[in-house]
Length: 157
Image (cartoon, rainbow, N blue to C red; front, side, top):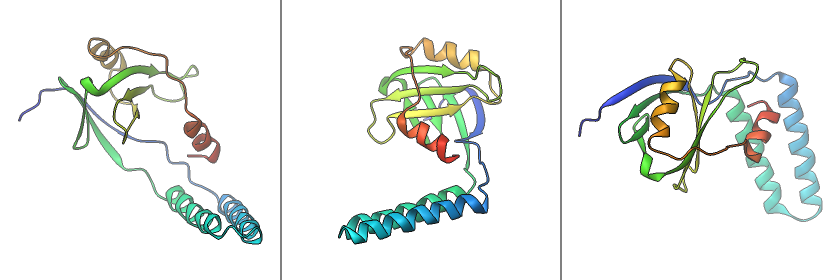
């Protein structure tokens, strides 16, 4: 089925901030100390979880985020090969940086349990056109950063 593409742009999920060696050392020290404390308390499963989480965070910190292709289509928004229809969206908001240091972001809350909150960079596209199109199909709501967003920003992601 052919889909009419209204707007098309590319962007990354987040800005890649290269981590210093000190950041990795701090992660390792915290992970080792937490693992030792868990073992001393006899919680071996939690110790294994800490090691797995530390390795996962280190691997995630070292890789550059992939470039995604976003398409605003009549039925919703397409991210790569995945289509998120307007019928599954509960609300949206365009988040803009007051200092204009970062491009605007489209925040979309959906009914999907796999991707309940989408954050889409609007760099290289007319944010007003995206806002107007979404306004005709989805309710606008006030979106704030989630706890996970705040922790990721604190960790430098």
